Image 1 (cartoon, rainbow, N blue to C red):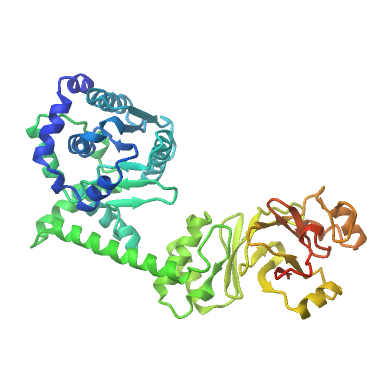
Image 2 (image 1 turned 60 degrees about the vertical axis):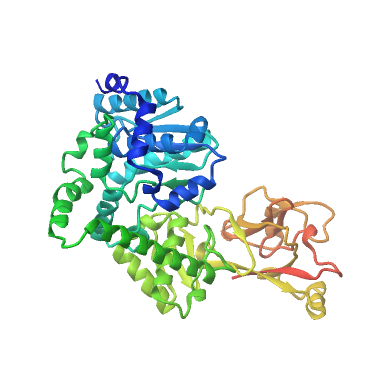
Length: 482
């Protein structure tokens, strides 16, 4: 049994000997530098029991002895190969115990219906994220090596990936939630890793699913890579390594350029995308901005390569249009902004609260919108406001403080607030009746509210007392409903 075999190995000694065969300077320099600068938090090593991840665990143990007290071993058992999967988990646990390291086990479901590589990777990453949170850490070390880079690049070329996809896996991959995945072995070939493990007498697990051709990666590894290497007249591995690094540089440059373009209006979830900011820039920036915005809003999976190209070309041409984005949403483009519009029925409108910020229009049901702008209150404008010359059905001015956090949602029965000049609070429903706003119209009206102070305004009704313009008010939040 693999576990009993692991118990015959002096794992600390094996780690020491392996670290001599693969010295610290052979690991990816940027990753080593990153680790040396981040020694104050716990680290986790993802170990499947295979040759690559096992070598990684032993090398980190051997090269960073000061981290032995804060080094964790994480293993995810997908439960797809029965006893073989369970034996691998026991093998890794035995190794971790021999090294004196905490072992964290995650397990999948044996009856999982979707066994695609994407689904399995998603489940694995969810476990890694939770494990890091549990140890109050953000660094996960992963055993990808040079051969994995070639396989991934060829797979993604077949899918038509851009620079972001082709430069994966990255040596240092930072996630939005603060996690960082590190790959110290990414410049080392698998043959060298296996040779070093054999020299120190270390066993490892062999995944039987890697022997078949059910997965695309396996077919690339078994049928394409050997012929590619044989056909090459130079060192193809150095070429792949260099291409991946160059693609990463280009991808980082494009991302930095995009951030500069959207510096004043960052691309965010639940906010429209300002296409007008991209005017005059290359198509690559349009594509990157659109990819990022669709992903942040959770609708990117609804677009094929063809439908994405249609959407991209429509945006570049700046023509108003509507386009499906799944069963729950559609896209709507007008006035230089791309909106994600909830599909609602008249009988049951649905609209999640959206943050309201100056310069960012909000798309509403029935093709309506709400625009917010920060304006300087001139004496002339104040006079119009104080004399009631502004129609509250379409436009109002709220006392604006940069500390305010305004949001917009649809009306809910039971909503109430204190209208301007009123001695107490009133129900919106009663005010709708007073203003003769129909019952069909009410469920579709936006309600603007401040996070701490409550409702500020609803079209057709007066603003709330706490947000009235005073004589000494300098700035206002102008709201336009249309």
